[in-house]
Length: 211
Image 1 (tube, one colour):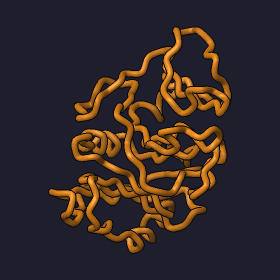
Image 2 (cartoon, rainbow, N blue to C red; image 1 turned 90 degrees about the vertical axis):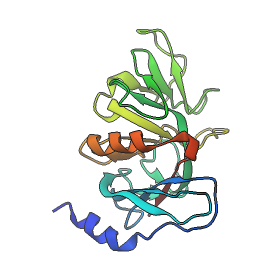
Image 3 (spheres, rainbow, N blue to C red; image 1 turned 90 degrees about the horizontal axis):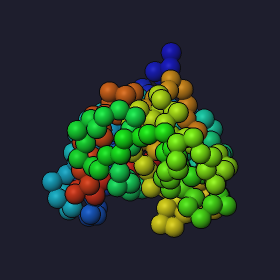
Image 4 (spheres, one colour; image 1 turned 180 degrees about the vertical axis):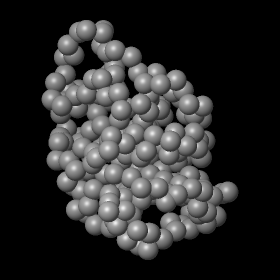
């Protein structure tokens, strides 16, 4: 039964610290160890920056990196980075905007994520003319071809502002493909859509990943 890792991790998760911070929404991703590919996701909210957190939704079963989790994620190593991160300012998706509160970009042919450490635009969204090969290479993803995982996704701002070459790219909260990820966090599509609709950039949401 694949539910065993989920059941075990319920007992390990605790409410986030009540320490003051600007964030009033928090997504927690709790894994039982750094070697598992399973985790539990919870959504938390609070009425002010100094209040304690209240559980809004979850726990929901999720998948993480195919080689677990790491505090030293590197490009292509298959781990999900541990830490607390901001969400990007845009939600992307192959479907229509599911009524998100965040700016939405509908993915089209020619939309890429630059995962080439030698590129000056490493770890950013890029658009090139449909049918044209991009100047960047590496493991860069043609987003429109990932019809399951990228039905919808939010960017987890790992290795941004600035991006350090080789320290990892394209870490997303995306739809489940039925297995472990290459470093992202994935949720079943219905749970993902619920989370993306809930995220409100005015409340400075964060995601905390632990293992």
